[in-house]
Length: 205
Image (tube, rainbow, N blue to C red; front, side):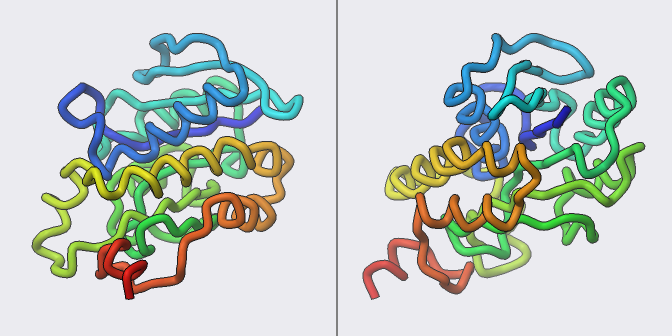
């Protein structure tokens, strides 16, 4: 069984935030693969289903980003899941908008949601689906930036990335993370770029 966790903050005021792209990703996976309805459990919203025959639980922690590990740890303990069975989808400011990278283990790199999961019973060895949202260019602006909504001009690449993450999910379910990363980028191509420059500026250059 897999636990696919989208990181974000609960409530309508945060729904369109860059910080909530993880919630958007698991929503897209649920729609694409016919998951059951969302219900409340483990201090989270969860949906059950299968991806390419592999049983999976989608999760959107309702604890707010900084306490995501409470919900993840509770579910992982209940189902006796090891760290590699947990996959977190989240916003990555050190990747250009639309870029996508898989990673297993390592530190939190300043992401409070990831830090919280590492501090839970899961530990640091879980799999991470890093969804590039770009960087505002100044560390002091990061908090405001990630808690801001995606601009209308970004809608096309955001939807393409979400759709690609959902369509390629069978590779993720089979544990083929490198192939999953490659297929997501094939389905939603995004040029390598400086994360501190807006994607539309890069595309125009």
